[in-house]
Image 1 (cartoon, one colour):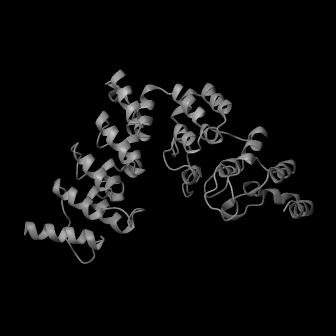
Image 2 (image 1 turned 90 degrees about the vertical axis):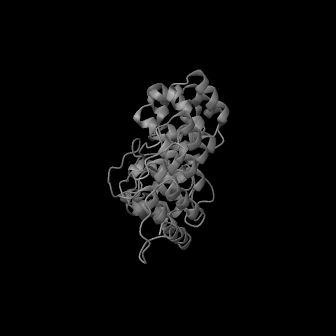
Image 3 (image 1 turned 120 degrees about the vertical axis):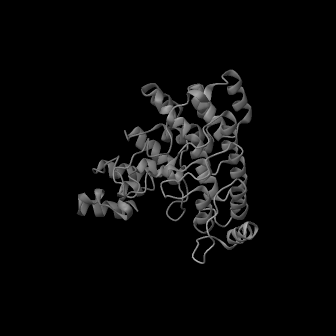
Amino acid sequence: MLEELQQLVTANPRVVAAPGARGQTPLHYASTIEIAQYLLEHGAAIDARDLQHESTPAQHMLRVIQGRHYSRDRQDIVRYLVAAGCRTDILMAAALGDLQLVRRHLDDDPASIRTRVSEVYFPKQDPRSGGTIYIQIFGRQRTPHMVARDFGHEDVFQFLMERTPEDVKLAQACELGDEGAFRALLARNPNLVENLSDEDRRRLPDAAQNNNTAAVRLMMEAGWPVDARGEYQMTPLHWASWHGNAEMVREILRYRPKLELSCEHEITALGGALHGSENSWHRQTGDYPATVEALLDAGAKAPKLTDDLEASQGVRDVLRRYEEISA
């Protein structure tokens, strides 16, 4: 609605900075290059951050996650904003398939190859915010490699792999489920995991958080520490249990994790399974009875089955059966 926008700006030039829903500016909502250009010409801040995600217009436009306002991704507008000088990052460059921009980021900062969708690389300015919009549009812990693959930019993916250190390549092969690359890397350097940084060791719980069973299996085989801590101080077993991913739980249990470790929420893996059976993102699809059974068989301490115990009926049935056996 360019004509209506022009009338509003003519009447009050300050509206180009007016905050809308969740603190997004008019530029965040630009639906065409023409609209974006007009707003910039009239003083809109190209890198204004919204309040909910503390992210710029260009970051928001990389992928449409709700079709209510936009029928397509607005990457054409992002490319215009990049040409106009907006702030960029290697994940944005990978999503755009802009090989030249990816190369520039790596030349300026080789360590940017390790960038992930996390607070480590996109720290919150306001602890009450929801974190970068990349969590919504890419997913937690996604890497430039994975983003390039997600958007179908194989040339960018291959270039990123060429510029990637061996330890990151190993984690990347695991996360992508590329068993061939995984085994080739380990064959060249069988002690690679012993020299992982603390950040790279965290990739195991992050993979579990993303419910990536194949990645967890490969990382465990390679020798990642089974009790490594991730977000909320949760171990891989905490995350697998919370998801009700019985297959992943059984895989992790093969490596003898500590069953009674507590996370930031002061619950064990079994406690996470009980709570997750009614509250997890996967409560409708996770196999919580099998998860709880695997943990109990491994020696996890069962809670007393009370009326107010927070757990699904299927999980309660498992706990009741174990109570009867031990009685």
